[in-house]
Amino acid sequence: MEHQKPREWYLKGTFVFLFCVIFSVIGLIFVLMNRKKWTERERVTYLLFSLLTVSLEVITTFITRDFLIVSTHYILCLAIVLMHVMPMKNMAR
Image (cartoon, rainbow, N blue to C red; front, side, top):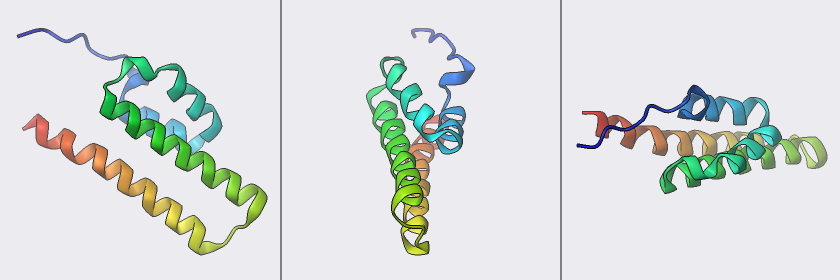
């Protein structure tokens, strides 16, 4: 078996998701800069999540603060995080 090098703390999923939620535009830039360090599945998940958070920020800042739109964005973000985390827990078993 090939021994995998442990990842740096800033490339782990929890940090990336929190970074994209707190600093959405900077999180998108962070994901784009580090996209070659993740697998294809992780790259797509992080990119989709960061684009959703940026779109939420743009919509709430410039267009509207409608509760339905904001809650739909949060539900989509939660679904993406769950789709990313659940298979990881199944692999660990």
